[in-house]
Image 1: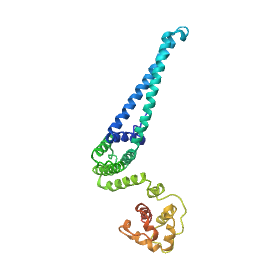
Image 2: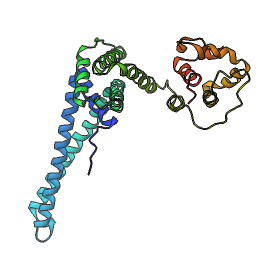
Image 3: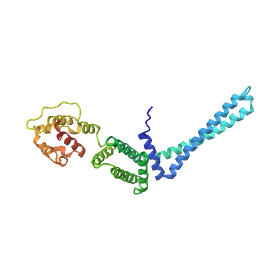
Image 4: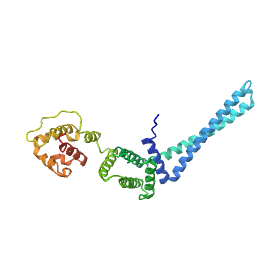
Amino acid sequence: TLLNFMITPDGLIDQLLGSTVESEEPELQKEKNKLLIEGAANAKALKDVEDRIIEVLGSSEGSILESETAINVISEAKEISIDINKKQAVAEKTEIRIDATRETYRPIAVHVAWLFFNISELCNIEPMYQYSLLWYTNLYRHTLKTAEASRNLETRLKNLNEFFTYFLYCNICRSLFEKDKLLFSFLLTNRILGAKGLVDNQEWLFLLTGGIGGTTLPKPDGADWLGNPAWAELCRLSNLEAFGGLTGSFIKDSDAWKPLYNSLEPHKENLPGAFDRLDTFKKLLIVRAIRRTSS
């Protein structure tokens, strides 16, 4: 049987959150750990009480109400149970307060965790691109010690985020072949933007596949310079929300799009009309479609 020992995203987030709070709020983390130990001790004490009651009940002869030993054990168990329940009630209130403070550090833990799964995918490019969780968490601990300090939590989280992202990027790039560095930069950027909700899933899928299905309109006259596969891809792209009117613009004035097709640096070309106001990622999709090969 093959077992998958890969850590889960939630598991890694919790681990990183613990490391963050331990560094940023050491007393809080100590209190959290103390509560966990006390909780386990209380649970054991309750189990011991239950075992004693069962033992007494099992060994008693005749009526339990006539057994002084049984009555004493049950009375003692009741007192212990009440005391433990009181402690647990206090512990629960304390834990709620602690967890509320811990949660303020969750954004950086989530960011760091998702970047780990991003670099874990690099082995699909080259099998030797594999990085251990221990190495990764040590990078983060270094960040906690090195990133610029601030009493303002929002500023501190921003400093941690920026420092770790760049620190990770530099360390990973040292291990990559030159040809793979640009691809890694792109994947890392996409992961960060995607986590912020700035990359549409349908647009990302289009970048990877060129779109699937949809109706291909007749190619306009005078656009013989554009291959049929590229035109079909443009038609599929126009079905996405941000690209409504793309085929209409092309049909109306295909020559306005020809400089993009001929340019040695298409990513730097201005696009016709309102399409020039699209963000860089969306412009990349148009470049992908128009500059696709005829294969």
